[in-house]
Length: 433
Image (cartoon, rainbow, N blue to C red; front, side):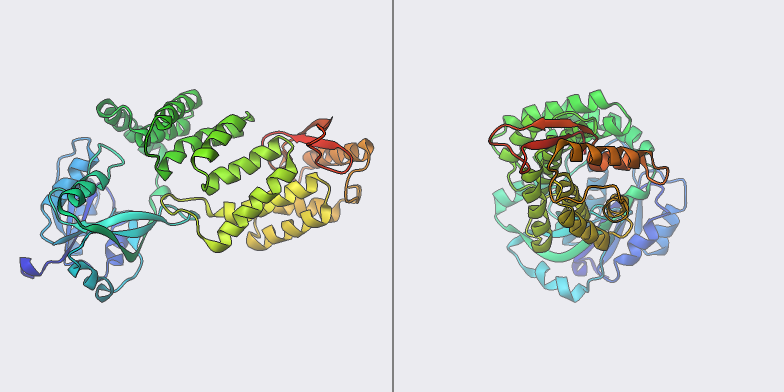
């Protein structure tokens, strides 16, 4: 094919990708007019596989800089447009005729598609197709992106970002993550030396600390990112991730996150994950009636799918997680019929959900559980608490799952006059959920 006829160049960098590469290249179908692959030092069959599929393979020295490697490959591309993909990704089937007309639109500088980062997560927007313009190049040592270069090109020459119905699947989470974290750690630190206020890199550094079981360092890093975010004039949806990671980490440890949650929700009022974490915090505080509408809102979000797709979310918070949380809330305010209803919905949504199975067993098979719509006396409350304690000793049930559901009862306390969570002025204080 003559150079003038090359419209779309597929570009990627690889190293020891024999497990994924063939399926990635197969998924491209007839989309690519050429495939350019930069190999940064494979010791397996990756280069042979790439050549067998007709790719041009470039041997690129690894300089501990992902952006530099990607840009080297793009510099060798001859197409008018670039499709950037990783070896552990695949593109959903789409015909070339379906997207070819979009490349004739002179007003478009790039196209927004969808990326599914991991099985079980919702799709998020991603820019993987852009003009082969020398200004549009990747930046960043790690977690590199083209946004800055793309914005520069649009600012100087005009144009806009269009949309294409392309969907990319990512399968990289199948890898051994510990090795990846050790690889990423020095690169993240190097990036921060250049730009110490890069909150995106700080957030990922916190994740590496967490996965390496260095929890205090993870928390400190996320707090540093949040301090920088607080001073930003322009807040982006992905800035919420530092808040989310820190709140989740604290909740797992049974620590209160109320002040941090209130700040995060005020800053990101339409973030579904923050809604879910807020519902969990309400449960931990014993404020079950406040938690119920939170989880119902998540169910509605799941039905309408009108949440912001700038970032990805665990799809279970819109379904099974919200349903089992509602079952827990209704159980803890002693509305067993509603609890059973949501438990059944959770099981229908996720038949293997262990928490839902435990609830269903608790609500249908345990004869000593009080069958009242509310607990009318402290004695009834204590009976239920004893029953839950018995369940935690049942060898057939994982005690950790009981703790996840109920959080462990800390006692019964009289509420303030404006904070009555049942008809008799008592509430249960649950621990971490």
